[in-house]
Length: 151
Image (cartoon, rainbow, N blue to C red; front, side, top):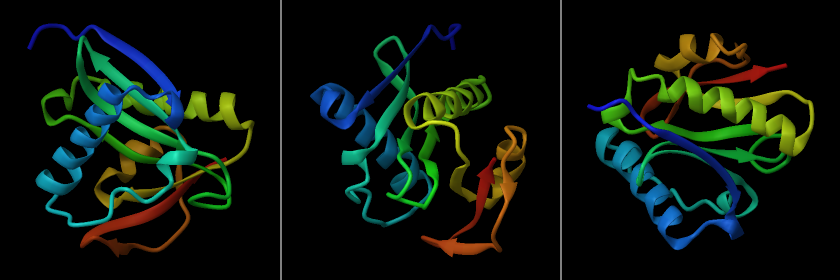
């Protein structure tokens, strides 16, 4: 793979173009439904009130997360649907995504704790950004998860 030429964008739902929305839904389906074999309701109405952080390599969406105001998914600000395309894993795209997600959450929603529901196997990744475990393990869509929070 050639050196990625990343562009980072963050938009409210109403500001997304049809192309961007399609790319988001395509990547979420590629990773969560096909790769992780999860049958779940992806369109959960939280997208409408969220901001959408996207990392593009030219015209390809390679990493994405949604930034959710407090009171929608959790009492606190939250980051959800954190994903990177399989072809871009171990390229730094995920780290770039999460660092930007944290920064953008505080810019959009103020300084406060950020709460996430994390897949358990990614615990160390999230801990490297200051998140700490705040729940016991639970199954969501047959995948082990924990809740984590960054003060």
